[in-house]
Image (cartoon, rainbow over all chains, first blue to last red; front, top):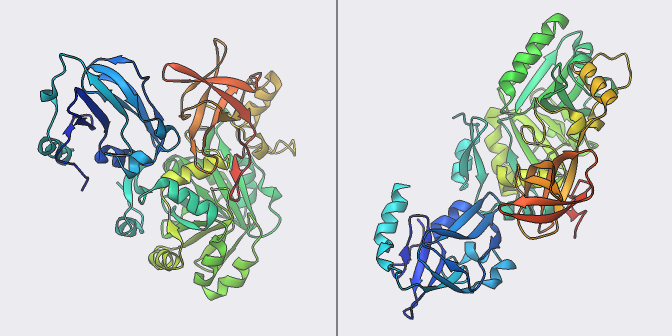
Length: 129
Length: 362
């Protein structure tokens, strides 16, 4: 049974989103996603300052098994990336919701958190997988 | 899906099961990276019962194998000695790669890949009839590979007593056996160790005994990164029926001498040699950031000069490595197309790692 914190929001493509309450969100991949991928060995992050559309592939996480795109669920500007992952991609396996965060996004005006799933909806999706 | 006799133990030990060559097999038991390091540093065990043991018996078993295989079983002078060989089609393409053990002049034992077993048996059967040789697949046997610096020491006490001294004295690429157990000092990891063939009914006992001795179960994921670091080819990725051994890094396994030995595929290889072999296998080390994967294209400037046949992250090197097939004149500095980028890589000579140590590095 994977860990799905109730205070976060989720996407169908297994990203999590934390509303920082200041017009920005932090994004990572879920416990379920890291479990499916296996040991992470490489992470490619966007550049700070990049403008991203909702649904844009803006990061890549690679495990021993495969490469997987990470999508920005919301439009905005990249304001921070988790540089520590370059040296320690395993942080995503060990702590997907904390040390394993990927990037922070300053939301565009039209960004709508309402398109995201809550924890219950995400759990239902995972159970159906 | 087919299941080996150890399948319930894989589930019991937390194996993440996947389909492989028609079999339900463990990919890993939690962490592929930890399993990889376990084998390089200590000892791990692999269920390789999905591979097929084929006994070949008959007065003319040896002349038959000298025609069937690209390597020459006449090199096997000592009972129990093993030889790695390709089995070629008439065009010089690789039907399979295998290990052949010399038991005596009228009895050899082959170990072939799981996914190729049906076509191998059909091919061997078709050519064996003329030699009155009977290929006999040993579906009654399980096979466990125990690999790592401590593997032999942890395995020996668990072998039948009658086999223990002989197994302890084995040289690399040599086997000993009783009526139903067979122990070879061979493997697919670049580490010391044994491959043990034994009656299916006794396999779970050995697996549990090894586990109790501190030998960890290892899945197919780490098996692949271990063999890649060891520079060993994987059938279906690094060579297949569309490639000859000469362009797959396997020329060393083809015995062109003596010239009068007319093995299957020889005329095709001679034609290829006369015309010049246009492609070769190389090892690659990624010097930029990323992970090499199968089928990524290789470039020199704008010219595409080859493709990765096996790529991945090498846990012992903490860097990405690959086997690739490139044009014969490819230089040592290349670039790899990874998504929309070109990342630098350099040609290195495999193996990348062996006996616990990295042999190449940036």
